[in-house]
Length: 63
Image (cartoon, rainbow, N blue to C red; front, side):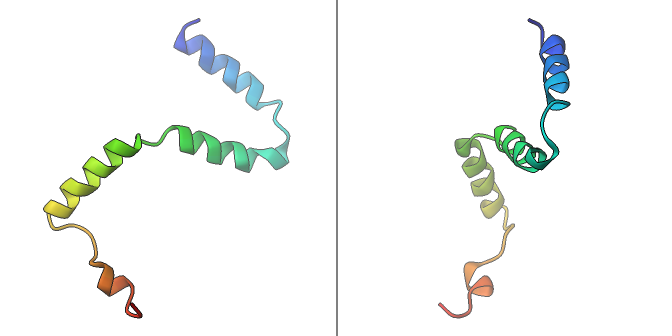
C-alpha cells in the first residue's frame, strides 16, 4: 500500500470518528508527529548554547 493510499484510507476512517472523539484523536496525531525525544533534547541543547531560552530563576521566583 502506498503512502497516498494510506492517507486516503485514514481520511475515510476519520469521517467515521464520532465528533466527541475528534479532540483526543487530534491530540494523539499531534503526539505521533512530534520529534523523538533524543532529537528534541539535541535541539534544546543547541538553543541553550546559542543563548536562547529563559533562565529558570526568571520563571520561578519562589524557589
